[in-house]
Length: 405
Image 1 (cartoon, rainbow, N blue to C red):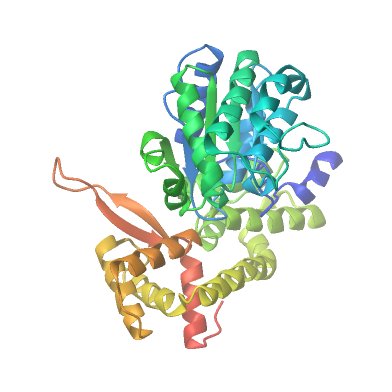
Image 2 (spheres, helix red, strand yellow):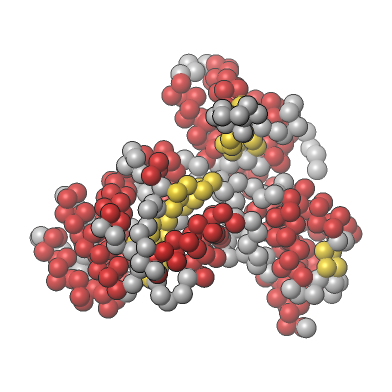
């Protein structure tokens, strides 16, 4: 029992991208990924790549870590981020080094494709400063992936994909589509912030529309409750329903804040030895939890300043406050952004309005949703909701110079 209680100190790990103690929701994403894993194992054709996108803090990395962990040794997986490579050659190096034994079998084939390029000390691929023609890059990457897939089905998970260099992305995305067309057992999973679509379209205009796309928003009330209560239950702690509802509300169903509150509560339980989370517990930890959440608000607020979006964010926040935080049609958001640009003395061109909306989505200030039409057969309405309602409230308070908790 003492050992179990000790685990409360690190049960929740907010902001690390680590696997959460309990992955709440995301059932559609999990089902699709698991289906593709089974298809790979059974030799079935993979029809499309998988794209997961959402604002920071919505649990993209944590979810994919959880899914990766469940994959058994019938498949090979590679987790990579664009910060780990600066060229297609370095990406090939990463793929090769994921299985050192494979390099010995493929190096003889790959090396001639690099012509006079210097080999790296460990792997034998092009160093960062070297470059290849795009056709040779594609041939080299195809060769490595084909060899990989002959040994085992291969899954590449690329986190932070919105930072992928368009030139490297063009090679990777085209190769992924090509080798799947050859029935190679390969799945590419890309995860990034809401501007991922725009970045990928720079590399391949059709890749997005041909992929299985999963937007990750905030949790439902029930999912947030489970994310808090179920991990604690495993350690003999009960979570009062009223307290769980209060915490979910204060966290605004935002996965990162759920982990922040969970961490503060779990550490408090370890310190006091209590076996139930009550409203008293919530009051005891609220100052610390609010301080941690406010640190994130401060960072996002600074980003709004740096991107010259503060006045736009304030105007949009005020509009949402008049709707009690409910959705606003996309055309109204466009109008609000246009008026904010005029206030700043800028011409509200369509291009600039769209760019500002993308930036606001990228940092998680607003979140695009589709509202089904009440009329049968009509297309859904493009709308936006607050990415994090409490962030909008924070921005509004700064604008009015009001202190509030």
